[in-house]
Length: 284
Image 1 (cartoon, rainbow, N blue to C red):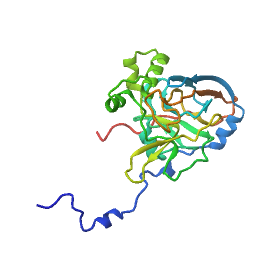
Image 2 (spheres, helix red, strand yellow):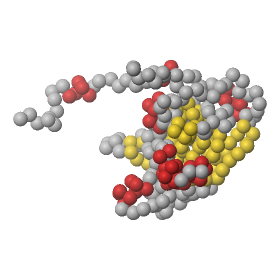
Image 3 (cartoon, helix red, strand yellow):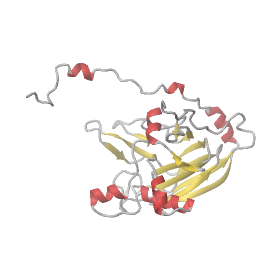
Image 4 (cartoon, rainbow, N blue to C red):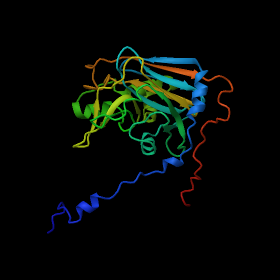
């Protein structure tokens, strides 16, 4: 009987197949960063919230407004969820965002919504950590590959309950902000953008890793809302994610969210993102 794990004679040739970028991203709708920069120059703050350590909060961002997430007091990462303000079932789709852009996102990249909407929810317009790039370990900042720390995985691995994982923080925040029960809110919590988090895959075993974030007080990332949004942000119990998470052992700090309204007329010609134009007939 042939050993099914035996390497075939043409193994090297099979491995030598050339990689192909899966999507023709040059055909995506263009991003007018100059327009956004002009609109941002005259914008004024209109709302905001401080997210406490090991907790979560929601915030509202009307279409055509900007929102900024800032590190304050100490290095801290955050888990970001986005929802259509008028329909919680339309939410940020980290997997498709990763496929259309990269494992880590930056200026000019967009956060896309789930199917069937599949439209830009927000565009990254500024990032003080844009300098980081890729480090020697293969790590980058602002990933869309991790999920979120959650009490279920923590219970599975440690055999104990911890209620301030990002999943629970976001569940409590959405329940409070939207007037839902925890049971109603939890199914709407979804895979996140890990703001400020430095992550990658190990070069030998290809396992997901985290390392201390390069974020420092005053660093920020800023987004332009392409539609009416509800945002949810958790100040992760992992702090800078350089040691542990899903416990109270790591120093944690607040994150500040600010919402800015552009001056009237500064977005001339811009329109909120429309749902995907696919007919949804699925060949029938």
